[in-house]
Length: 302
Image (cartoon, rainbow, N blue to C red; front, side, top):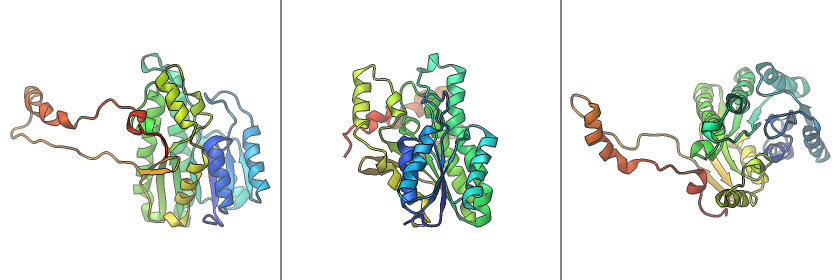
């Protein structure tokens, strides 16, 4: 019962990874606010049925949960989500920023709406909900944020400029939260999940490469992600903050963060010509290729 006595908010908990995280946290002793607006993968519509089903699963297992249907992409909605935790359970200890949508389009065809809607849910939503919880975490001297990022942002993928930008932005947000709030006993970490979910099911399968990628993802179930989320939310992770973990079936990876690879100095500074003649040839061997997530994680899940 790693989370006994704690209250957790899990956004996007109506299915997939969010549902598994919410039910796992309840099994670990937490009282859970199940946040889900019941929209489609693209963010359209709304139905409280998925969220209610998650609440029922938790209650059937002997846990406590309450449904919240406010949108994370709205500042007032985020405040209301946290208020639901306070009104129903009297406190808040954990925020899992999992809510998300997909609008996969090749960059030169991506509309402003495709961009803004994805950024709004993933990046703005993570900030809004985290910011709403932050004063309570600070006051009580404890709290844990868990943000769901993606190798689409950490490494790269085709046709996901909006999603990739949002997910990489979430890692920077998490690191900033970790730096700003460590003195209050507050932690912030990211999970990059590999798991079959409704959102992953929306990935195009128009090419043999895409079909192969999705086939691999179908082997990986969301419950493998939930264990890491429970750990990061618990006091067992009291010295773990500012980190990025990838979870792929039975594998756990600590992901790298940007650091200098190589450096050159030139007395008197660099001209454009000197950069072309000297700096780029010296640095080129350390260039990153235009690889995608599937190129880096090229072996079958273990």
